[in-house]
Image (cartoon, rainbow, N blue to C red):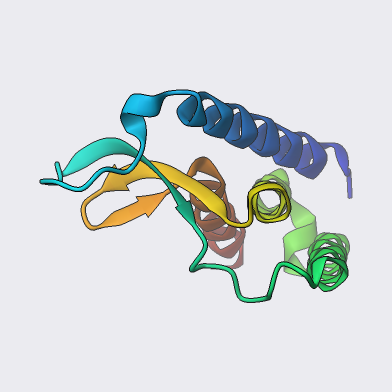
Length: 141
């Protein structure tokens, strides 16, 4: 199993996610304001509700991330996911998305969500998690 594909996919997701969040945070016109909602819009909010653990348990949050990353890498080294680059890229995307949201959680106390498609608001990391897992599951089907 080559580790290059998931590492590159994960790093690309983290980079794109963090750069997009930095850009959105720098634009005051995209801050969440009350009023009518468009079907599709850029609307920056700090989502603290998605946090499962209290922020003061940083060591636990990082420990859970390490466990998830280790399980993802183990799944790529054995079984049906070990047989192609599609699954490797998918797992790398998902781990990169989780990493991007973890970085937000540790730096800002919540995930920065900004892509609003009524009624949801999400970010590139969320898209990478869902899309990456979909790619990995596609290999299994």
